Image (cartoon, rainbow, N blue to C red):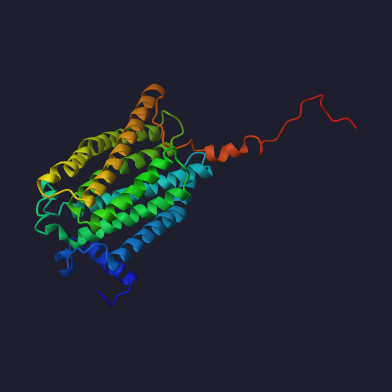
Length: 329
């Protein structure tokens, strides 16, 4: 491994990871525990190439396949609506894939539950060892969110643009610090809980963009998928995730002394918790709008045509002359 280029390191580790996670074939590399010593050069290479791969796949598939398809199937396919549909489709794909990866990797570990196992063995150095699949997924996760941070800057700005960027920044920093400081056991639980609700949300968005009225079948499907999302979100992020934060804040004290690294990671987890409560308030607002107005709306986004129409209200609209006001020579 020492003679390989950074790209070869990424390809080798990635190939072993996919072979293990998808096909269940574990080589001698993935069966051995990795000894952690902070973020090494190979780890950094995996992070950088993971971010580049996620960014290229996201925008490549979006531009080459999703947007042309959206232009054919969407009613009134204006540019803003096409781009938002493609954005929702790619986020559905990424969240679904990473949720699958997280499930396959995390539930192979011996410390999934009870939560006391997240902290036991710290004083014996057991947290210094990490399953190679879990290790690759951990860094891949950080790379994916770094790519998402850049992508949000290029997409239509949502009403929660600042909150999304704070979320992505905190996630990347938290994943990398928890990896470097061996705070990784609980990290897998956080990743799993924060990914499971998003696929239904983006499926609901795609049906919403396909809807022509509040009573057609795409709107009906959008409402049902949003309901699935709302229940999943509240259970995973407002019930289980606060328990994880409690465990990180209180339960860990039974197993080791709190250090600066622990406080930093816990502080970042609390920031994410505040964001979850903020987004929960938006969910309840959307449910209220659904009950009052009928048909779910994505209240985090501007209307589909806002970006296009705002610049056309005065400057591009032809001005009709009033009769009898002709210019005299």
